[in-house]
Image (cartoon, rainbow, N blue to C red; front, side, top):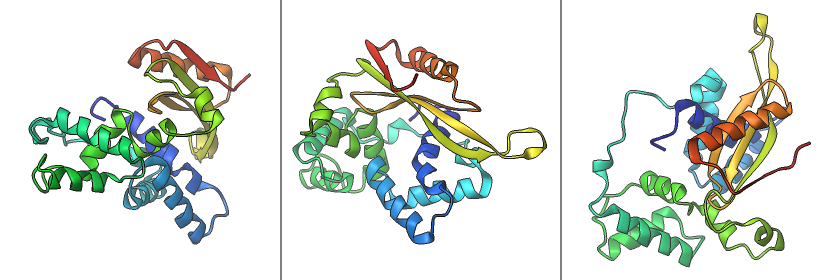
Length: 228
Protein backbone atom coordinates (compact mmCIF):
# COMPACT_ATOMS: atom_id res chain seq x y z
CA UNK A 1 0.00 0.00 0.00
CA UNK A 2 1.14 3.52 -0.66
CA UNK A 3 0.68 4.60 2.95
CA UNK A 4 2.45 1.62 4.44
CA UNK A 5 5.90 2.02 5.92
CA UNK A 6 8.74 -0.26 4.90
CA UNK A 7 8.48 -1.97 8.28
CA UNK A 8 4.76 -2.63 7.90
CA UNK A 9 5.34 -4.22 4.51
CA UNK A 10 8.18 -6.32 5.89
CA UNK A 11 5.94 -7.48 8.75
CA UNK A 12 3.26 -8.57 6.29
CA UNK A 13 5.78 -10.50 4.23
CA UNK A 14 7.17 -12.08 7.38
CA UNK A 15 3.71 -13.34 8.31
CA UNK A 16 3.32 -14.87 4.86
CA UNK A 17 6.59 -16.83 4.91
CA UNK A 18 6.60 -17.74 8.61
CA UNK A 19 5.16 -21.27 8.06
CA UNK A 20 8.06 -21.93 5.65
CA UNK A 21 10.66 -21.31 8.35
CA UNK A 22 9.72 -24.18 10.62
CA UNK A 23 12.65 -26.46 11.42
CA UNK A 24 12.85 -29.85 9.73
CA UNK A 25 10.83 -29.07 6.60
CA UNK A 26 11.83 -30.87 3.40
CA UNK A 27 11.88 -29.13 0.02
CA UNK A 28 8.57 -30.74 -0.89
CA UNK A 29 7.06 -29.58 2.42
CA UNK A 30 8.12 -26.01 1.65
CA UNK A 31 6.63 -26.21 -1.85
CA UNK A 32 3.29 -27.38 -0.46
CA UNK A 33 3.26 -24.69 2.19
CA UNK A 34 4.03 -22.05 -0.42
CA UNK A 35 0.97 -23.20 -2.37
CA UNK A 36 -1.17 -22.98 0.75
CA UNK A 37 0.07 -19.43 1.43
CA UNK A 38 -0.63 -18.46 -2.18
CA UNK A 39 -4.29 -19.31 -1.70
CA UNK A 40 -4.47 -17.89 1.82
CA UNK A 41 -3.03 -14.47 0.93
CA UNK A 42 -4.09 -14.31 -2.74
CA UNK A 43 -0.57 -13.73 -4.03
CA UNK A 44 1.53 -15.51 -6.61
CA UNK A 45 3.84 -18.44 -5.96
CA UNK A 46 6.66 -16.39 -7.45
CA UNK A 47 6.15 -13.58 -4.92
CA UNK A 48 6.18 -15.97 -1.96
CA UNK A 49 9.36 -17.59 -3.28
CA UNK A 50 10.95 -14.17 -3.67
CA UNK A 51 10.11 -13.21 -0.07
CA UNK A 52 11.36 -16.56 1.22
CA UNK A 53 14.65 -16.38 -0.69
CA UNK A 54 15.18 -12.76 0.35
CA UNK A 55 14.75 -13.65 4.03
CA UNK A 56 17.16 -16.59 3.76
CA UNK A 57 19.74 -14.34 2.11
CA UNK A 58 19.38 -11.18 4.16
CA UNK A 59 17.05 -11.79 7.08
CA UNK A 60 14.21 -9.49 8.12
CA UNK A 61 15.73 -6.35 6.58
CA UNK A 62 15.70 -8.01 3.15
CA UNK A 63 11.90 -8.19 3.32
CA UNK A 64 11.58 -4.42 3.21
CA UNK A 65 10.66 -3.09 -0.26
CA UNK A 66 13.40 -1.40 -2.22
CA UNK A 67 13.19 2.40 -2.06
CA UNK A 68 13.67 4.82 -4.90
CA UNK A 69 10.50 3.94 -6.83
CA UNK A 70 7.18 5.67 -6.39
CA UNK A 71 4.10 4.12 -7.92
CA UNK A 72 2.34 6.64 -10.13
CA UNK A 73 -1.43 6.64 -9.69
CA UNK A 74 -1.66 8.43 -13.03
CA UNK A 75 -0.84 5.09 -14.63
CA UNK A 76 -4.27 3.79 -13.64
CA UNK A 77 -6.91 3.59 -16.38
CA UNK A 78 -9.24 6.58 -16.67
CA UNK A 79 -12.28 6.21 -14.42
CA UNK A 80 -10.51 3.59 -12.31
CA UNK A 81 -12.85 3.97 -9.33
CA UNK A 82 -15.85 2.80 -11.36
CA UNK A 83 -13.71 0.02 -12.86
CA UNK A 84 -12.79 -1.09 -9.34
CA UNK A 85 -16.47 -1.14 -8.36
CA UNK A 86 -17.24 -3.38 -11.33
CA UNK A 87 -14.33 -5.63 -10.39
CA UNK A 88 -15.76 -5.93 -6.87
CA UNK A 89 -19.14 -6.93 -8.33
CA UNK A 90 -17.45 -9.59 -10.46
CA UNK A 91 -15.58 -10.92 -7.43
CA UNK A 92 -18.74 -11.02 -5.32
CA UNK A 93 -20.67 -12.81 -8.08
CA UNK A 94 -18.07 -15.58 -8.04
CA UNK A 95 -15.67 -15.55 -5.04
CA UNK A 96 -13.39 -18.08 -6.75
CA UNK A 97 -12.96 -15.83 -9.80
CA UNK A 98 -9.28 -14.89 -10.13
CA UNK A 99 -7.95 -11.37 -10.65
CA UNK A 100 -6.70 -12.46 -14.07
CA UNK A 101 -10.22 -13.56 -15.05
CA UNK A 102 -11.74 -10.33 -13.75
CA UNK A 103 -9.36 -8.29 -15.89
CA UNK A 104 -10.17 -10.46 -18.92
CA UNK A 105 -13.90 -9.89 -18.44
CA UNK A 106 -13.41 -6.14 -18.12
CA UNK A 107 -11.36 -6.16 -21.33
CA UNK A 108 -13.95 -8.22 -23.23
CA UNK A 109 -16.72 -5.88 -22.09
CA UNK A 110 -14.73 -2.90 -23.28
CA UNK A 111 -14.40 -1.34 -19.85
CA UNK A 112 -10.61 -1.25 -20.08
CA UNK A 113 -8.12 -1.50 -22.92
CA UNK A 114 -6.11 -4.70 -23.26
CA UNK A 115 -3.02 -4.74 -21.01
CA UNK A 116 -3.92 -1.35 -19.49
CA UNK A 117 -4.42 -2.77 -15.99
CA UNK A 118 -1.96 -5.12 -14.32
CA UNK A 119 -2.93 -8.04 -12.12
CA UNK A 120 -0.89 -6.74 -9.19
CA UNK A 121 -2.52 -3.29 -9.34
CA UNK A 122 -6.08 -4.60 -9.34
CA UNK A 123 -5.23 -7.18 -6.69
CA UNK A 124 -3.79 -4.45 -4.46
CA UNK A 125 -6.88 -2.27 -4.76
CA UNK A 126 -9.28 -5.19 -4.23
CA UNK A 127 -7.37 -6.11 -1.10
CA UNK A 128 -7.42 -2.56 0.28
CA UNK A 129 -11.18 -2.37 -0.43
CA UNK A 130 -11.78 -5.55 1.54
CA UNK A 131 -12.40 -7.84 -1.43
CA UNK A 132 -9.24 -9.91 -1.71
CA UNK A 133 -9.75 -13.61 -2.45
CA UNK A 134 -9.40 -14.63 1.19
CA UNK A 135 -11.57 -11.76 2.42
CA UNK A 136 -14.46 -12.50 0.05
CA UNK A 137 -14.44 -16.15 1.08
CA UNK A 138 -14.98 -14.99 4.65
CA UNK A 139 -17.90 -12.80 3.57
CA UNK A 140 -19.62 -15.72 1.83
CA UNK A 141 -18.84 -18.34 4.48
CA UNK A 142 -21.88 -20.28 5.66
CA UNK A 143 -20.29 -21.55 8.88
CA UNK A 144 -21.62 -20.60 12.30
CA UNK A 145 -18.25 -19.42 13.51
CA UNK A 146 -17.87 -17.10 10.54
CA UNK A 147 -21.31 -15.59 11.13
CA UNK A 148 -20.55 -15.10 14.79
CA UNK A 149 -17.49 -12.93 14.21
CA UNK A 150 -18.03 -11.33 10.82
CA UNK A 151 -18.63 -7.58 11.04
CA UNK A 152 -20.23 -5.64 8.17
CA UNK A 153 -18.06 -2.51 8.31
CA UNK A 154 -14.49 -1.43 8.99
CA UNK A 155 -13.37 -0.38 12.47
CA UNK A 156 -16.23 -2.21 14.17
CA UNK A 157 -13.90 -4.87 15.60
CA UNK A 158 -10.13 -5.27 15.80
CA UNK A 159 -8.88 -8.78 16.56
CA UNK A 160 -5.44 -9.30 18.07
CA UNK A 161 -3.15 -12.25 18.61
CA UNK A 162 0.49 -13.19 19.30
CA UNK A 163 2.42 -15.69 17.17
CA UNK A 164 5.85 -17.25 17.58
CA UNK A 165 8.37 -15.68 15.23
CA UNK A 166 11.81 -16.73 13.97
CA UNK A 167 15.11 -16.66 15.82
CA UNK A 168 16.99 -13.43 15.05
CA UNK A 169 20.54 -12.44 16.14
CA UNK A 170 19.50 -9.42 18.20
CA UNK A 171 21.42 -10.13 21.42
CA UNK A 172 24.96 -9.09 22.27
CA UNK A 173 27.40 -11.29 20.43
CA UNK A 174 24.85 -12.01 17.73
CA UNK A 175 23.30 -15.03 19.46
CA UNK A 176 19.88 -15.81 17.94
CA UNK A 177 16.83 -15.07 20.09
CA UNK A 178 13.21 -15.90 19.35
CA UNK A 179 10.90 -12.97 18.68
CA UNK A 180 7.13 -12.78 18.82
CA UNK A 181 4.69 -11.18 16.42
CA UNK A 182 1.84 -9.15 17.90
CA UNK A 183 -0.77 -8.17 15.33
CA UNK A 184 -4.25 -6.70 15.01
CA UNK A 185 -6.56 -7.09 12.02
CA UNK A 186 -9.79 -5.37 11.13
CA UNK A 187 -12.48 -8.06 11.34
CA UNK A 188 -14.58 -6.92 8.38
CA UNK A 189 -11.80 -6.46 5.83
CA UNK A 190 -9.15 -8.76 7.38
CA UNK A 191 -6.68 -5.91 6.80
CA UNK A 192 -3.63 -5.83 9.08
CA UNK A 193 -3.95 -2.55 10.97
CA UNK A 194 -0.84 -3.12 13.07
CA UNK A 195 1.90 -5.77 13.35
CA UNK A 196 5.22 -5.66 15.20
CA UNK A 197 7.87 -8.08 16.42
CA UNK A 198 8.90 -8.06 20.09
CA UNK A 199 11.41 -9.82 22.33
CA UNK A 200 8.76 -11.09 24.80
CA UNK A 201 5.09 -12.06 25.12
CA UNK A 202 4.09 -9.62 27.84
CA UNK A 203 0.70 -7.91 27.85
CA UNK A 204 2.44 -4.62 27.12
CA UNK A 205 3.25 -5.66 23.56
CA UNK A 206 -0.46 -6.10 22.80
CA UNK A 207 -1.16 -2.66 24.22
CA UNK A 208 1.63 -1.17 22.11
CA UNK A 209 0.39 -2.83 18.92
CA UNK A 210 -3.19 -1.73 19.61
CA UNK A 211 -2.02 1.83 20.27
CA UNK A 212 -0.33 1.87 16.87
CA UNK A 213 -3.47 0.51 15.17
CA UNK A 214 -5.69 3.18 16.75
CA UNK A 215 -3.22 5.95 15.91
CA UNK A 216 -3.18 4.95 12.24
CA UNK A 217 -6.78 3.87 11.60
CA UNK A 218 -8.92 5.22 14.43
CA UNK A 219 -10.60 3.70 17.48
CA UNK A 220 -12.64 0.53 16.80
CA UNK A 221 -16.03 -0.08 18.38
CA UNK A 222 -14.62 -3.19 20.07
CA UNK A 223 -11.49 -5.32 20.31
CA UNK A 224 -11.00 -9.06 20.77
CA UNK A 225 -7.85 -10.77 22.03
CA UNK A 226 -7.51 -14.38 23.13
CA UNK A 227 -4.74 -13.64 25.61
CA UNK A 228 -4.54 -13.39 29.38
